[in-house]
Image (cartoon, rainbow, N blue to C red):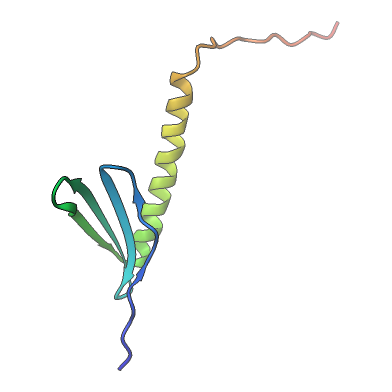
Length: 90
């Protein structure tokens, strides 16, 4: 009998939240943790995803990233839309 080793990837973290991704038993496991003073990192949510769902999540996150970046650039832009007229042939 062959045992599968758990593979972990570098965590994504800031001062208050952290996301850990690992492979366990053929599934991608995502854990979200928050920092609690005096206690340390405390896992709040755990999600285990099969291969098909990992692909779907990847597409959804990529789409969300594009829309968030677009919204951020729209907020920082004060340029009004302009209509350019094309020269007409005589």
